[in-house]
Image 1 (cartoon, helix red, strand yellow):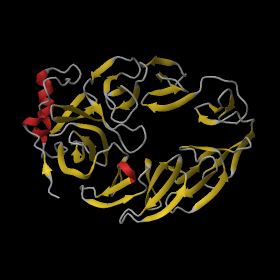
Image 2: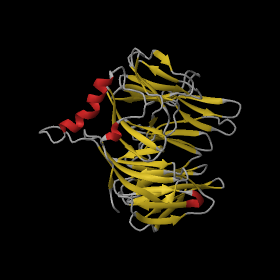
Image 3: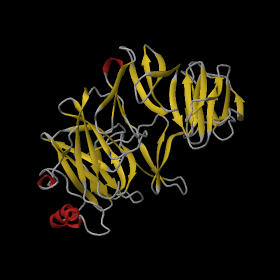
Image 4: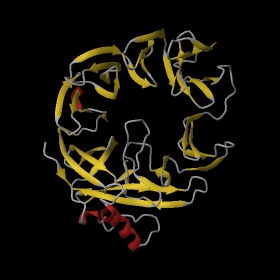
Length: 402
């Protein structure tokens, strides 16, 4: 496929309505835009930013799951179709699972591409050969890769744990629900008779166990400090570390590092809270629905937690002072759930501007002749929905190795 290199000359100028980085004056902003052109080729200086269009993929854009792996791009479309492409956009293979399926996730494990799909409430995971698209593996349930394990949860029947590199089964157990603990090497397993246990992902050995009276239609919710088995009318609260009964309290359903602070959310809560990790003090609550991620320019506030969410602004994580207004810019997503690369998109009037978010502001990288949305950025490749109803693919080099 012929590569089309997008000109980075005059198109570097952002639209008249585009927000300017921080409080930087216009001359300084122009210097920032032209600096990579001036320094390109100088000894010890990174190359100038560049964007190369690889083309529109040969599938319609239906808003389905899409993933960029090390050597393959996999896209799910309507009627159970799954299509694979080379990293240069050339088609590799196409397969149909079932016309009534809804693809939930796409994972890589055991040398295969695993597609988890739901059909009439029945969840199945199918493993495809990444080179040919031939079906090599299938099992009921939803697969997720956690640390070095592939966990298959077939609610409300069982959990099976495999070695992620070989797909060799390590162990299995009866379970109506299971929840892995990332980075801890363990998994929480709940059985139909009320036994709840924490087990090692590697062997299935029991670390801690307890028995509870299950509420009606139980749901397993794991927070930072508490485990909640929630039913329609009542709930069972357990201490996450010991599995002993615990009193109801604030249950942090989300608790993750956001640079020098913690981005947290209370179970069933609608507001993201910014927490001081030193003492647990809530520094501020974001407006309802907003989310936040750590970036080189501080804490970036998003309009919501969805993929491709509109950006709002960046804040100083401690003081909450506004750093850079970002109205009009949209985020892109990474492969990992919740990951947001420091690349932003401004779609307007048949074009889109790409910018890198840096500590001192926005650096416009280039523009492309498409209005882009729902973008995924992984391994220097940008995969986006276009206003033409197709998926577009670009190679993006920001000039600093990112």
